[in-house]
Length: 433
Image (tube, rainbow, N blue to C red; front, side, top):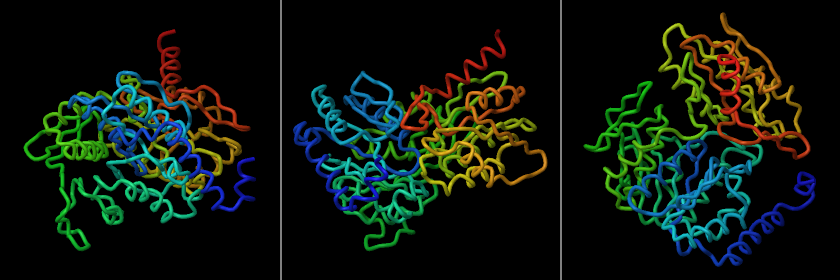
């Protein structure tokens, strides 16, 4: 029904509808964001992790914090899972959340901001003081009708947040986000040099935070910011970038680096983000990666730390609903380059044929000697298969859903789901019953 309406109703009418709902929501709840510091985090990958990291830094500095991400909702000490299958809630829900945060006397609200949410005006009438950019790679291309429109949607957050901008300078789209006006600009990087900046100020109005002496291992991630050494329990180079984004926000709020260090080093894991759910006799990792860039980073991190001659068994699928079909063969190609055994399976098919989705992923798989590819439509059986294929010291990686609590199938139906729980249950039955 929604698809039919979108085809029949002019675009400006739909935009007016979304805008009107955003205005009504703000009026109904009394424009709560005017009385709280709101931080918006956008980009393609890493948003949820950065929201969690920023929240921990603000809490460590003595502030009461509310946050929204694809993982969970938090208001002070209260938290509950985001089971909406929607990263950024609707306009009324967002304003209600901010009102509750205000009532609970929170100083900050940290919100994960999506391009789809911006497209539907969910960010409107929220007084964002700070905008954070993580990175940008192709996603939601069909919905936005091109990468440039996708990028511009992200840019609208920076256009609305005029006080503080935090930008990943190592991303090739950094110049675009640096072009928006702000009272203060903070850039973070591992390899970037300020002299590379184009434009009038050549970075004179930009405070740069760099990670130096980076060391990656299978147990921790080390780097220096100035004279302060950070030892994260979270693995992977991408988590250095996530940490740098949150550190920049801390610096922008006059929070000492030692406070940032203490907060970040306390984080054991981020649910469904490179989460190791089984460690012996082999590793089982559950991760949300559902874009080519995120999947590449996930596999690369696992490859860097795996023991020689051990195998990587990778379970993956791709979301349906007609979204981002272009990426399906790309996911297959990446998996075939990095994994020893691939199990293609169902993910969130919505109204698409799951078998066709798997076939589209399979088209990108590059056959090579030693590579084994399985097609198991039932995701639960696919997870079980990955555990049965794994030998001591191997790594099974289950990607695409992370900590999501639902699988979306045809006719708008949702069934309860949790990759982590299923992996643990299957493991228990295999080894202890």
